[in-house]
Image 1 (cartoon, rainbow, N blue to C red):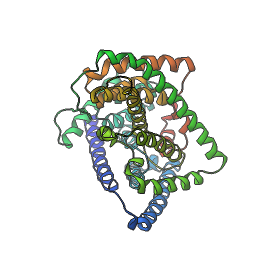
Image 2 (image 1 turned 135 degrees about the vertical axis):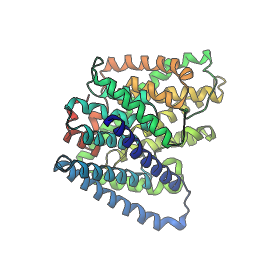
Image 3 (image 1 turned 90 degrees about the vertical axis):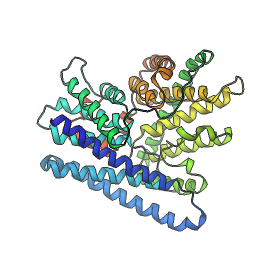
Length: 404
């Protein structure tokens, strides 16, 4: 009964958060003209200051153990602060996703409900939020197994699977859906001829992912050398300028999954890739709130579609094959960044039907995994620890010990 109640509350909180996020994304996708130059400038400044204040407040709550002493009030306050901070990031147009706050909310609620259980049980909670963020219980299952030290033969795993499924069912019922549907509608399979390009995609995505992580190292070094305030100011300038050029350059980028076929110019695609890449590197070195998974997937998808555009000069490539190859590129790119290959495979099922994407994605990820083993690849989590509110909460509530 407690597990069911927890599942319902997680679904309810994340449903409210997702609806609020959608409203914000719809609002900020409105094109601006120069008449709004000064008001928009002031809006960004005010929102940045407010978010910085809220994050400092949340950090103080966590560091002073407020949530431990006042479990119910502390849990509710931290969830409200998390949602408010992330929504402010979205409102500015920063390239952050909803998955990290979803993970954090599920974890905080789990702490409230199951604090009387062993610390061992806490490692399950993040996967609940991850599964709802992608409407994919399998992704949540693999996310927890790959990021935390969970033994396969553990009776608590049955409770975990139960909560994954029940919270997912509650969520889709609240959302008005009664069946699971993929984000992208495709019914045709990848043509056998194009399977030969999957190993090439695995290798190229591996190289790009490796370069991306090293760029992150470089930007983190520069941030530590100077001050994160500099990165905050530079991010502010980038957002302010880019917003008036095109909405495509800002936000978390999820819109590309629906509108990618409308991008006809390879030069515009190149500009999207490079602008979004550097905006992400600046934004991720501030202490502002939001998830990095969806933007990373978006960047991988843009890399994949760019690859398909170049490939189309040499072979005939229809739109369905291009999207499938782009999704493969996306999950391989995310796999090298996160070092989560099973999770990456499961995430692909959120975008395309299992029977269409499973085999080509599996081939690409196996090659990617072998390459990661050769260089002893580590997750980018190691780079962003002690920078985000999410990891500070994990640390305070004793989840850090279980992390990869």
